[in-house]
Structure formats: structure tokens, C-alpha cells
Amino acid sequence: MTPSNAASTPDPTVQPVPASVVQQVDAADTTLHNPKRAVLSLGSNLGNRLETLQGAIDALEDTPGLRVKAVSPVYETEPWGVPTGSQSTYFNAVIVVKTTLPPASLLERAHAIEEAFERVRDERWGPRTIDVDIVAYQGVISRDPELTLPHPRAHERAFVLVPWHDVDPAAEVPGHGPVADLLSTLPEQGITARADLKLALPD
Image: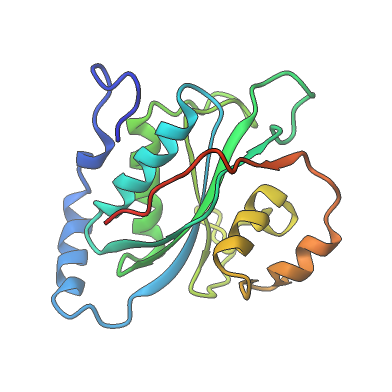
């Protein structure tokens, strides 16, 4: 599935992966030893939100060395960090993947997908066609400013923790504890289940 303006926008499912990443992944794929488990959060509040989320999931599935293993239900949420009513609501979901990509290469792929959907980064907390965040990667804890793991605010965001708990009730945020325990301490954050909307797990 592609963005609604596909005629003028590159298809993210064929967005090229950098050659250096392809070589690294192809080498790993010859044996597929020890694929890593990663959790990604998806959000959209511009355009056809559901179609864009599905397009991002399909693009991730088409990435060499990556397979999408679980897709959460869809939630509608109020924008984070901005005045109420100043932006459209988000559709959010969480996916679990297994991958031979190292974290930095997975981040490159996430950014490539965002660019394919014309994600604009001209203001903090600004509206976006798609946001693809790496929430956690195989229990890794890293303070690298290019990619902090786990995501530095994941443990306090219901729009991440609620769908993550749906696909993995035993999940833990490295360094912060079980997702279920974190959810019990969070205040109401304007998150609504959208049972009428579905995202497909790629074949």
C-alpha cells in the first residue's frame, strides 16, 4: 500500500537501501544467525493516516534482513507536546520485528521510509505524515545521541506502551521495567482504541 499521493511520491516499498547496508545484510542473511528483536512505534497525523501506517509496515517488511512479526491494534491519540486542538489527532501503532540489521542501519531505513512519505522536520512536535521510531532493540541500552536506546521517552508515553503491551504483554522497557507496571502509573493521555481500523501483518 502506498501514500495517497503516490503519483508524485516515491514508493517506499522500493526505496533503495544504501549499498553498504545491503552488503552487510546480505552477508548476515547467508546464515541468519541470531536475528535481533526490535520494537518500533509508528505514528501519523497528516494525510491518509491508516494507509500511511500500512505503507510504512510494508516498506519495513520489504527491507533486506528484516521481518515484521507482530502488528498492534490502531490507537487514536492527541498530539504530544502541543496545545489541544492545534493539530489533528494521530493514528499510532507498534510493531515487533526480527532483523539482522544493526541499530544504526535500522535507523537509516526508518529515516528513508519517513523521507519517502515526505516527512517534514521543520519544528519539534510538528505534524507529520509518518514517524518511525525505534523504541527498543534486543534489550540494548545506549546513550548515543544519534540513537538513544531504549527511546528516551517511551516509558512515559501511553501511545507507545499501550499498543506495545497488546502485542507483547510481558515486554519490558530496558532500564525502566515491565510495560504493564509503567502503564499502571501513567496519567490519562487521550488515547482511544480504534477497533474499526486494522493494520495487516505482511504475508
